[in-house]
Image (cartoon, rainbow, N blue to C red; front, side, top):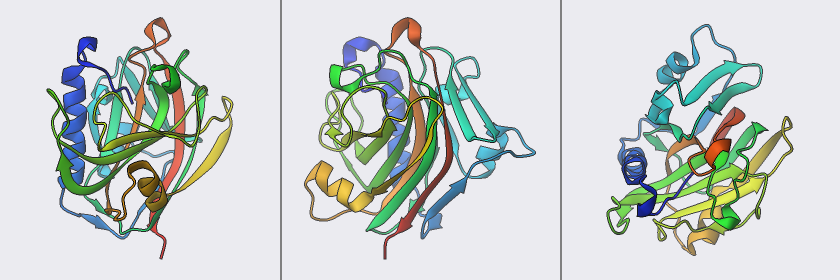
Length: 239
C-alpha cells in the first residue's frame, strides 16, 4: 500500500484510504467469531458476488479501466492495469485475540521496481488487518486512523520486518511475509497478537475489527501493472 508524502499529489486518495480504515474499525460488529472466505468460480460476476459477501469497493477498485477482479480456479484474481490502488474491504468484524490468520495466495506479476526498502512502497497484493475501534491522529492533513498492519508478498526487500511508512507512523505497519516466484501459490500463517506486539510494542492487543485486500502500483511509473490472486483468507481465535 503506497504511503505517499504530500508532494506526491495523492493526498485525496490517501485520505479516502484512511477514511476506509476508520469505517472498518468503527463499524458495528456484524460478524463475530471469525473470518472464513474461500474464493472461487461463481455464477455471478466477481463484483456482484463480493458485494453479496459484504465487501466494499474503495479507491480504484471502482474503476474498471484501472483495476480488474475475476473469480476462477485460482480464487479471486486482482489486476492493476495502470497506476492504481484498488481496495476491497470487509468492515464490521469482531475477532477476539489471540487470533490466527491464514492466507492462501500468490502473484502472477509483481510491479517492476517495487521495493519497500528503497521507498517504492508498492505491491501486487496485501491483506490488511485493522485492530480495535480507537483512532489515533494521522498527522498533518491526515485523518485519524485505527491500528492496522498490512501483510504483503514482495519480490524485493526484507521479509518478516515491520516497516513504518512515511505517515501514520504511530498506528500503521507493513510486513512482507514472503516472496514466492511468479505463479507459485503459498499459504502464509500469522499469529496476529504476536505480530501486533512486535510491531507496536504493546501489551494489550485489540480485537480484529476489519480486513481489506489491496494492490498498489501508483509509484512504479511505466511498469504500473500487477496481477495476483487470493484463494482464501481465514482469521480465527486461537483459543
